[in-house]
Each structure stands twice: as C-alpha cells, then as structure tokens.
Amino acid sequence: MAVSNQLTRVIRVSFGIVLTVALFSLLSAIFLSSRSEDILAADDDLGRADRSAPGASGISLPVREAMAAAGSRFVKSWCVRRTARQEEVEQVIQNMETQERSRVFEKIFREDYWGGGESRSGPGSRKDYTANVRKLLALAIKTYGVKELLDSPCGDVNWQTLTEGFNATTYTGFDIVPDMIRKNEATFQGWPNMKFARVDFTNTPIDETVRPDLIICRDAIQHNALKDGLRGLANLESTGAKYILTNWHSPPRPNKDIKFGDFYLIDVFTRPFNFSKPEMFISEGVNGHNSEGKFAGLWKLPALLKGDGRPFRIPESLVLKARQHVVTSAELEAELIRLQRPGGLQA
Ligand SMILES: *[C@@H]1O[C@H](CO)[C@@H](O)[C@H](O)[C@H]1NC(C)=O
Ligand SMILES: *[C@@H]1O[C@H](CO)[C@@H](O)[C@H](O)[C@H]1NC(C)=O
View 1 (cartoon, rainbow, N blue to C red):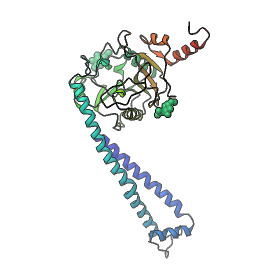
View 2 (view 1 turned 60 degrees about the vertical axis):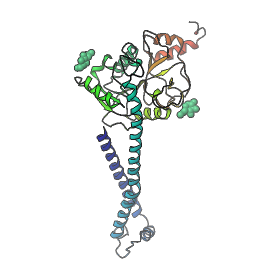
View 3 (view 1 turned 30 degrees about the vertical axis):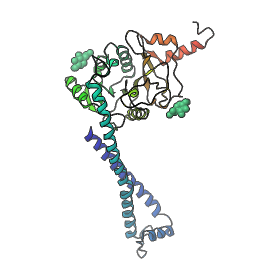
View 4 (view 1 turned 45 degrees about the vertical axis):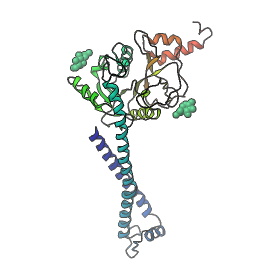
C-alpha cells in the first residue's frame, strides 16, 4: 500500500508538471503570436531581449528559448516544489495520526474492549447480530449486480463471508490495526476473492487499483471525531463506488464530537453528514431486539451532503417491517403517501 501510494503520488506530481508545462506552452504560444509591442515589453522584463534576429512571430529564437526556460524554472521553483513540500509534510502528519489511532484500536482489539466475545470487532459483528445486515447486503449484491466490495474498516471479518452471493464478488478489507490484517490474511488464505490492506481510511488516499461497486463502512464513523468521519466518508466516495452500506441510530439525536475510539449514536441524515435518503434499509439487532435503535442502510453515492439535513423519521409500520425484512425506498414512498390519506394513520 505504502509503495503504491508513493507511486500514485509520483504519477500525480508528474501529471501536474506535464499539465502545467503544457498550459504554459499554450499560453506562451498565444502570447508570442500577439502584438509585437507586448512581446518586446516581455523581452525587456526578461532582460534577455535580442531584437536583431526576429523569428517568425516577430520575436527572436534566443528570446523564446529564454522565455521557455524562465517559464519552466518558474514552474519548477514555485508550483511543483511547493506542492511536493506540502505533500511531504502532509505525509508526516498522516503517519502521526495513523500511529495515534492505531494504538487506540490495537488496545481495543487486544483486550476485546467491546466485549464481542465471538468477534473482537464488538457484539455488532457477531453472526447472530448481523443476520439482517447480511439480508441487506445480499439484496444489494443481487439487485445492483455488485462485483467488487470494499469493507472499510473490516475488523475481524466475522460475518461478511456468510452473505449470500459473497463468493461471486471480490472483496478488499481495510483496517488500521496491522495485527488484524495479518490475522485476516492467515484466516482467509484459501479464499481467492479476498485481499486485505492496512489503511486508515479517514486520512489515507485510497489506492487507485481499488475500484469497488459497493463500500461497507459499518460501525465506524461513530468512533471518530466528526471531521474525521466526514473526511473518511469523502475519501471512500472518491473511489468512484456506486453504493455504500452504513448504519445509523433512530430516533435521531444530534451528532456528538468525540475523541477517536469513543462512540456516539450517529444520525447520518443530519449535520454535519446530511446524507440523502437510503435506497434500502433494515433494522439491526437479534431477533427483532434492537435496543440501540440501530438501522443499516444502503445508499447510492454520492450521499454525503446530498440530503436536506432533516432527520429521517421512519413510519412505525415500516419500523416493524424492518425488523425482519429489507424496506426499499419505493415501499417507503408508498407508505408515506398512504399515511397522508384521510384515515391513513389509522389504517
Ligand atoms: C466460498 O469460498 C470459500 C473458499 O473457497 C469456501 O470455503 C466456502 O465454502 C464458499 N462458500 C460458499 C457459500 O460457497
Ligand atoms: C446540513 O443541513 C442543515 C439543515 O438543512 C444545514 O443547516 C447545514 O448547513 C447542512 N450542511 C452541513 C455541513 O451541516
């Protein structure tokens, strides 16, 4: 990952140079073909005027060369070097942040801090707890013909492989804890469709070879400071994925800014996330028991900042349905219309 990130950066910087030089050449060409008074003034500015040997555009070749050289010196010394320096510092900050987060989560996993027992990723990753989430994921895979999954963060991948249709997809799991990645690589060695990488998705640009159709980002944002959650979601969206599966808590409460590793009851529909409405959703929890009022939803991307910022209130009839079944946006629409009809509320 580190090597390919490096490579991506080199490619980006090179592309930047090529683009800037091309732009400069174009501007020079336009400039050089303009009126000769302007050109002579530019010659004076450069202090390299040689008016004795005008070229085709009315300006001498040495002057043009000097201009081009000055141009690329300018490009190199100002634009490119500044960007590279910033990139360098950004990389150092990014590593510091990741180290800090990693220590928090290594401890959580090592000590089974969330008391998941069966799963170090917490009770929310137990097989029985995730039955409904798997229904939602399976329906999304089938409905949208999903071929490639990105699971970020993936934790110990306790439930994902039990999803119907999973083996027909390719799966990439990101996690911040290096030991978790090593453990997953060992556990899923015989699975040709699965790969893992240590990535802190809240601050690390995602490798361009990872091109998911659907992203799973479950029980994750609510363990981060609001700005890091926002950055993480925007980063995941930047992969060009078409869908995201994430979760929220209902009834809505204001989102709380916390320290990394803590937890708040997240409402993705209100500030600062302002998600659009989901395509499908289901209640989480075991056998209809869902004390935290947690729901898993499936959104078309981009979803972040695409909603009106108002809480999403699910009609009670659909809350009941969602305990066992996936509710689609079409069903939601129909129910909202039904409830608006006279006597609808009693129906
Ligand atoms: C999926 O593939 C793995 C690894 O090849 C295999 O162990 C597992 O049984 C498969 N699952 C299903 C449902 O076919
Ligand atoms: C989210 O929605 C609210 C309410 O409409 C709005 O005030 C706010 O500016 C929006 N954006 C963010 C980033 O909170």
